Image (cartoon, rainbow, N blue to C red; front, side, top):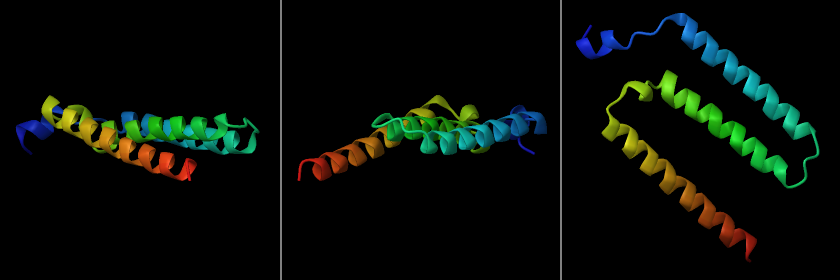
Length: 95
């Protein structure tokens, strides 16, 4: 095992906590889908999905322990993706 890997060994406990948080957030998404929040339903579901994505990226994909440059590059890519999706939605809304 390399030095980089041994510095960031996490016990099963943290993975179980993150997994339980993902399960709870999934349940919350189902509950929100069943409640009539009008225009806020999609926004709330996307917010919950974003939180779940951050948890997966940080813990299961070990982004939390990567160098700062790598994390900044991932953030730039995510911002580009969100921008492209936003522009696509604008095109659909104004047809």
